[in-house]
Image 1 (tube, rainbow, N blue to C red):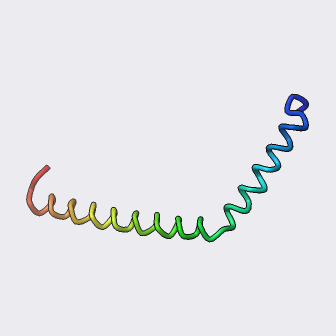
Image 2: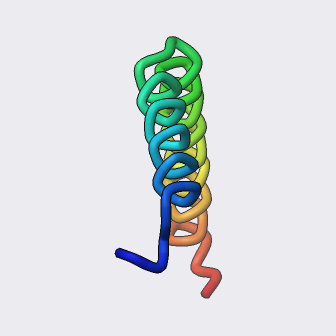
Image 3: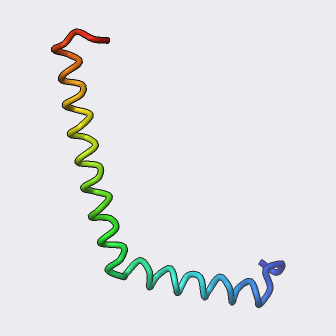
Length: 59
């Protein structure tokens, strides 16, 4: 910890403060909602493709 020094602790503190503000913002919530819907859409597409392969007999 002595090698970090005052400037390293200052930068770490600023980074953690900004990261905390970023996590609490609405941007992160919107981004997570968007990613959630992307995963749902990809899951549905993969399920339909898998179902078509099962019934068509392709491997």
